Image (cartoon, rainbow, N blue to C red; front, side, top):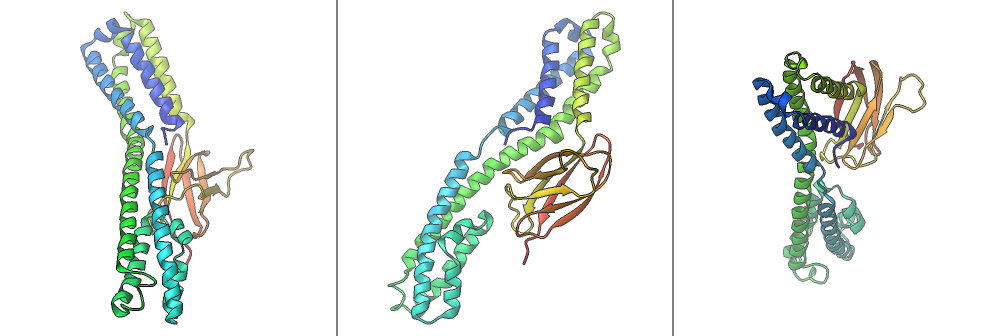
Length: 313
């Protein structure tokens, strides 16, 4: 869940430059514009630390609570659909029997989280009319009170799910802001200050030399990484594809390590380094239609893809 190695490498070098400023106050203060920008640099760096701390957050407790509530709800709903199937057998209602027998406890628990509440609502909407149409026949199987209890369990799950989503959103937002806002902002501060190095070099040669050495390490981080990253989700539900999605380059020259990757628990495929060129690849996920892509990789450039996988019908 935390920042990736690239982001951490940037933060390390930005921090090293900040320490250089702290240990060379005379050099920083020698030029008013440089000193003013150094203040902005420090403020931005603190924002970066805040992003890092937020990205280091965890959804562990929220995930456990969500899954626990889903298990409770699935058990109560599965019990009702089991009795609903028995009722359908008694009434020789083939259509109702087919509906009830698919909504088992195991099926409900495996249902994608975004779809879960809708499935429980379908169970309620299917069974509740029978209470009115057959008031003497249904009480031995299911009652309005039991169906309401099932709905309450569903609501409890939805509340836990929303808390999980909020926690995950905070983490994802911090990681995104670190990459698209913080790093470019810090690089701009550095570019601004580089314009004054020649003025400082005569009086503070060691300071300027070390400044340039750190900046070179910052630049190397960007040059080392070129290729593709991706996030895979189900097209219909928008839920991330956890640990089962794959991507592979099909026309890459033979290498010791194949150019392919697999989704992590957040549905992300980490950076796959690629040479400059045009490459053909394919995203795959069990139960979904394969999605081919063509990538044009340029120097020092990372292609970030958001892939929506369509489920097979």
